[in-house]
Amino acid sequence: MLAKVNAGAVLGVEAYPVEIEVNAGRGEPKVIVVGLPDTAVRESADRVWTALLNSAFLPPMGRTTVNLAPADIRKEGPSFDLPIALGVLAAIDEIPSERLDDLCVIGELALSGEVRRVRGVLPIALRARRDGRAGILVPPENAEEAAVVEGLDVFPVNSLREAADFLNDAVDVKPLRVETAKVFDESGAYEEDFADVKGQEFAKRAIEVAVAGGHNLLAIGPPGTGKTMLARRVPSILPPLTLDEALEVTKIHSIAGTLPSHQALVAQRPFRAPHHTISDAGLLGGGAHPMPGEVSLAHHGVLFLDELPEFHRNVLEVLRQPLEDGVVTIARAAASLTFPCRFMLVAAMNPCPCGFHGHPLRECRCSPLQIQRYRNRISGPLLDRIDIHVEVPSVHYRELAGDGRGEPSPAIRERVLAARRLQHARFGRGGQVHCNAAMRARETQAHCQTAEAAREMLKHAMQELHLSARAYDRILKVARTIADLAGSDTIQSDHVSEAIQFRTLDRQLWT
Image (cartoon, rainbow, N blue to C red; front, top):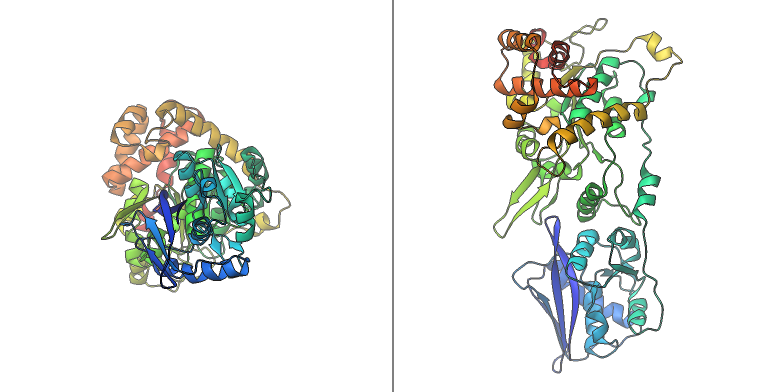
């Protein structure tokens, strides 16, 4: 008898439907899996047959053929175990096949028949709703992420036996419901807070400007001055994630397998801090079966690169296109996959190899040539894409020993939100430009009106600092953000002056 089961698989960050056909016939006892299966899918026959026996079912004794359609796309992973098993049971009349018509099924099987978690459940659930399915059977550990999809009944099943009994109406499995508003409320508070940072007022101001305009930032300073501490608190002043943004981020983490069990949504801004030994494939994504890299896992959040010059040169250079476009395209012979990666880059570095160049108390042991080589590990084109360069000096003892706390993150976030609201009103919602850092030439010309004194200051900076056209553009955008924080429609000279102060590596004392 022939039975059909609706399943799904992920290609890039989107899912596509997979129809599993199972035919249980006569002949030599044998299981054949077709439809471009990988090794894990081919091995599913052994897992499924053992799980059937351990769940008190008698598998077909003749030739069984399993087809995964469409047959021209390679199927990967163990997520087809449960739908194949239910297809076998429907083919031998152990469950009614018509019950499977309006359901999507996904899950890995243990040899005992237990249903194990898989990756990519959220995009598959979204695709199932789009295809008009009434419900989806998922592993219990994946149920919460699937339940955020409204209009789709999510049935968590613990075992193959429970799934079969549910389809036979022998047990009642209640559909899981998740209140997204409650998820956001429970995940709204960040553990890290700027109130814990003592001193570094100039650096905190630079971070506030960077977040308000969506600008990338580079912190330069000796070891132990708090660069990493400051970076880890950046997500706490970013605007809260919207539901659409949270779904995008959760899809990526679900596909990558980094979403914790029983977690419905990634409701906080991601913070990713890869080690400097990471490869370009690890950063951008890729592999034999392309998966999201760190830049995509940081989508709508922060990518922190500590000890920036220690990263391999080729790894840093591949960042240039994602920083500009907000997407990563991975081309393979069979397909070209696109992963979103709109993130805020925060990087940190020492001023020299030993870390103490320009330190008021510690002596630098590096020669000028060593310092120049160290800084040259970061290319000019990459530096031009980092809008703000800020010095993070050593903190004095009286600041460290003081009892006072710094300004808390919620207070800073309120100013950031006020500036972002001005930008949303300026650019409109839903367009390609969502913040000042994303302005193109047309928007920069239209929205960066400068006073006469500000224009003269920009002209002087271009001549004295030998700025590139891109650096000039970055200064203008940062000045626009500073004006937004001040509530000014026009960019004034003090706004330009502060923006120039945030270009440390362009100023003569660093050249």
